[in-house]
Image (cartoon, rainbow over all chains, first blue to last red; front, side, top):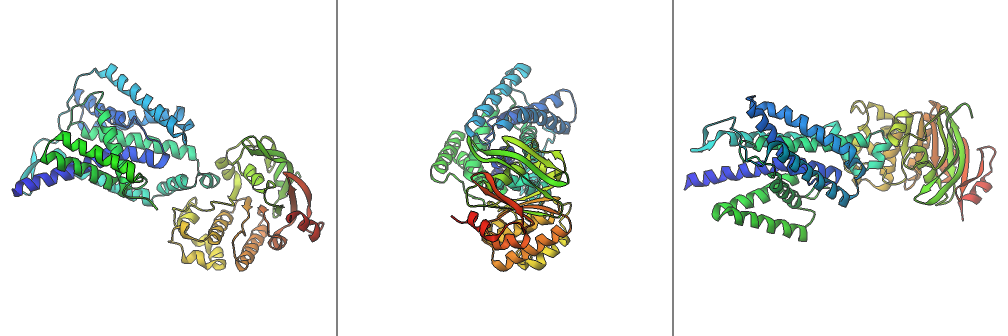
Length: 284
Length: 231
């Protein structure tokens, strides 16, 4: 019984951390630029394919990280300059544009890689005992790296000069511009950061899930739920959202099955959209 | 006009399709304060927004030491050497007072603000507080100190004294006169004639988007100015 509780606890921590990391890119772009990036899942998918490509060529797993940053960072930059830059503050248009982008990326991946499921061999095989329960080493690494990444991002955003300037830009864009901040450059940097974070989370999950062109659809929904429930504009909100969504999903799935888990998540998200649209943690 | 730090020639502009500024010209030299006076809604703030680049000029020219800058965007004009204090939304509410002051500086050293802290000790006491929690007048003081301390060639202040206590308005006047002696040029929009009289070298009085009176402080008499300030 104790083993079961320990195993379920680690599973819960794992699910929450993973979800929070998957949501980071979406939260950055939505929270700071006001754009709900419907292609978020496709950037995760592209990141995962970077891991596939790297492994197929026999390169070390970690080389997928620079590859994913290069690929998704460039796509993100081009999209920002050509499309997004003209659409900020036009919420509906950004939805249509990013939805179109998601179709394009999905179909392109299908054209290049085909519809088959790929798997990526885990870079950390074996298990490690946690409280007497053997647990996959790679999943533990995901927990550690994910929590560190979120922590570092939160500290950076709260304290760094760039973090402050981003906050200045989102809070009072007119004043930020008259102080000499190039809102264009900051916005482009923010968008690219968001797509790169999505891609990196894609690399991270590649060894854990089947990789295929349509995998992003599920992620964009789940991560959107995290943001809806957690609230925008702070890392704390993101963690709360991931706790609520990931926790509920794992808990319900553990006692019944995955379908009910997913159903409960959707009900929670609808309840939040309806009754508390600004989420658990409201900034300011 | 050849030795003007900032000159604007026949500027027009407004919001959407509505024209507000209808052909205004003026200039300010180094070490000089140009006060823009007029009733509410005559185009004072619009003029300053055109100068800063928050609004696009429909026609006319803006010259910074002789170079046309009207096509530049706001952040580029700032780098050219223009500081700006808006009339509304004067500070970054989410940031602390300290970060409001040091956001664009090369470092977070507060040494360069000592002259401002000496005049406005409240700023020093509230360094860690979020700027959004300050009163309207305190925000004006923060915004004013931030802009003047940037030490740029041209400073545009849009009603800096609004909501500020008289005692602190006098401190503002003293700091403006210090900067002036150091060679700064300023365009200051004001409604408060007593304050304007302590700082202005020249006046530009607007009505319905046009210049109706201009001249040095000595040239213009108080009654004429007042007749354009009150309904």
